[in-house]
Length: 328
Image (cartoon, rainbow, N blue to C red; front, side, top):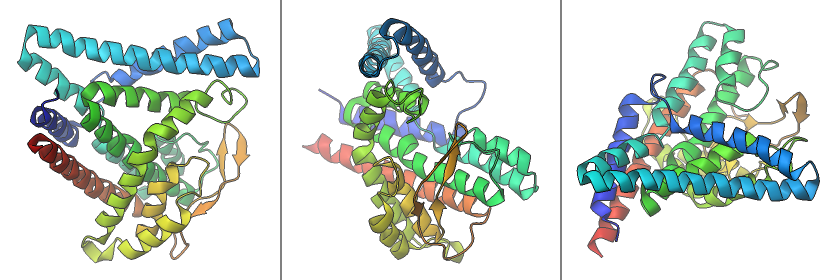
């Protein structure tokens, strides 16, 4: 039986560590190991299964099973071994595992690098900075395009990097949280609808859609609530955030990505998304939001303020739910 108060303490301490430390470059992140494992398996699967459509679809399922299974066994095994040594050691390692699942501070740090280069009018440097946090081609982006890309990734990853990990940690502790992170990492690496990954990455992409279905929608409604809270110079527009969410939340190829992007666009009263280049090809995409005012570089720190508001409210909700469950 899960000790709900202990689980809450583990998650809360991990959340606070992320707020303070973020993702320092000197600390090796387990996601890099997962990424290397995915690349290793991809090469082997392509050799074994060949290049046919059905073969690659089957290979994609194998990839998902191996990556999620290995992640669960290793993370669960580490915690089991630590528990055999000392309950205190298990608690400490659980906190570290939870901490590395959150991406609040790192999202802000990386997006603000883009902001600082834009403030210096250094477009090439801004393009490079934003290329570190987005999957699209950035060499054609102008100042507005770079700003939009940064705002969009902060908005989308409020769900992927905060709400979803928190949701799965609350359900099944650090192990389930890391299984989610493994799926999300697979989607970011092989979940593209291009010639190379259309079939091999389909299983990972579909599973990522399923796992993010509830967290993305929960996060969107929490972000709407956050937009209603008082803000300096009325930076956020709660009513408009709700309107744009209800209208544009499906204006994306992914069933989940536009959930929080639409809220952010409405809250800031700007228009996001639209056509973008991926791997040298122009991809037609619907707009999200209304062009009520021009996008400006100050929208990047505003998006980060919305990220932090939403993250703290989500953590508060998690604490409330775990406390209630503990009393039942």
